[in-house]
Amino acid sequence: MKSIAVFAALAALVSGHDDHEQVPIEGPHKGLWYNTLPGDGGTQADSVFSGISTFGRLPYHPCLASDDVKYDIAFIGAPFDTGTSYRPGARFGPSGIRQGSRRLNLYGGYNVPLKANPFNSWATVLDCGDIPVTSYDNAWALRQIEEGHNSILSRKPKTDASRPGPSKNGKTLPRVITLGGDHTITLPLLRSVTREYGPISVIHFDSHLDTWKPKVFGGAPSEQAAVNHGTYFFHASQEGLLANDSNIHAGIRTTLSGPSDYENDGYCGFEIVEAREIDTIGTDGIIRKIRERVGTEKPVYLSIDIDTLDPAFAPATGTPETGGWSTRELRTILRGLEGINIVAADIVEVAPAYDTNAEHTTMAAADTLYEVMTIMVKKGPLSATVEGYDGEFGEGRAELK
Image 1: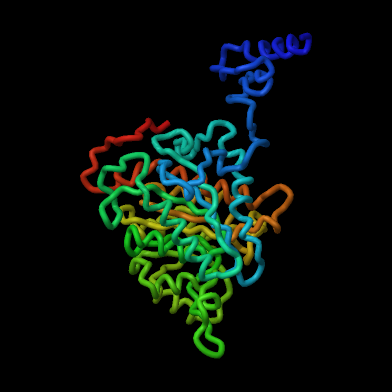
Image 2 (image 1 turned 120 degrees about the horizontal axis):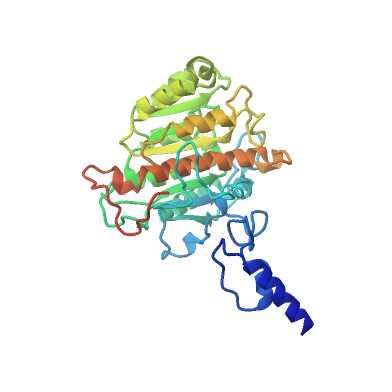
């Protein structure tokens, strides 16, 4: 009885502050971990360093296991890395990025430069877990990624589900952000997106072109040999997944086999912004080039290879290239894309095994997606991108804060 009295006294102590609304508790001892403490801003249960990791500590739902849950933006993992040509390990990228994102919502989630809070807005945002991906058959794995992504992408969103949207069938769809995985995953993701939107414009942040024509050794290559993290845009172009003359690379700085690589890249419909251009035209100039290339009206797919960053800022990647941008520069450029109609995005090539103990790369990846998530939220639901939209969100609407 004495121990119960002590627990009750402690519960009364931690629940006796008037600054915060208290969580109801059933027994005296639960007050030790389910009540709000002064200055905490939330409950003590599952603090920033405990609990199961989701992106930015978002609510988790296994979306592929159920069609019932509704969302406006979904995070989904694609743990695939058997398309890499140098250092494997990006199959652990989704879990690493989630770990690196734990502090994003620590102080409330408000994005100061963009003046918006993506965690507290009109949008319902969920972490849908990972697509189950085999590591034994690349062709089958790419099919799993395409179908898993399309299942998440093609559902009715939480907000404005009944309003016209920019998809091929005129419907409003949710947005999907994919955590890679090596860059091969962008091919099945583009296949999924074009099923809903038709040929898509692409903004591609990377140190490599990734439009290389597959080499054939001793005959026609199998799909496993032909599709990898350096050839997927070539295949996307051949399959008609890319919009003509409205795609752009940014951050390119790799060595090439020769000028013909750039010629082939042009055939795939890309314009190139070299990483070194930041020294002459600055971040504003790079933002201007991207915006002029893709516009603000048409649907756009955003793909970000973490090796856009210099290895000093992101060492944990499969094919690092020196001479890249800083984390601050990349985030500034991404903020400059506000207003562009990004319908889906990915971040790839995060291989946590090569990271520092301070988790530099996974935090950089998480913060990069925080910027992407914020500009998606500021754009409003995809129904808002259709001509004639009246400016009033329908079902599921909440005020932007």
